[in-house]
Length: 67
Picture 1: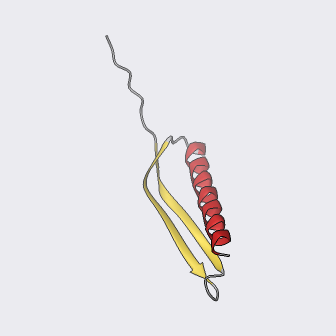
Picture 2: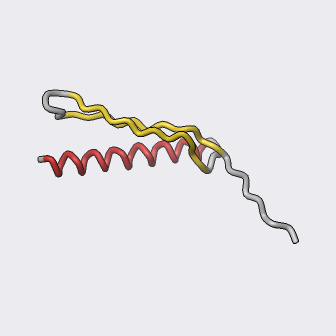
């Protein structure tokens, strides 16, 4: 049971990060700073959980050296 919960938490975390990255990319960003991943256990014995991923999307400017 514990291994199953850990797998679900990892899957949920990955989904949150993919959604966050997609939103940042959609809005022209290519990086994230101040990333927080928050886990909440709900229900009797932690039978349900919520995962929140939040961060600030940024646009990193690429600079190329000049000769």
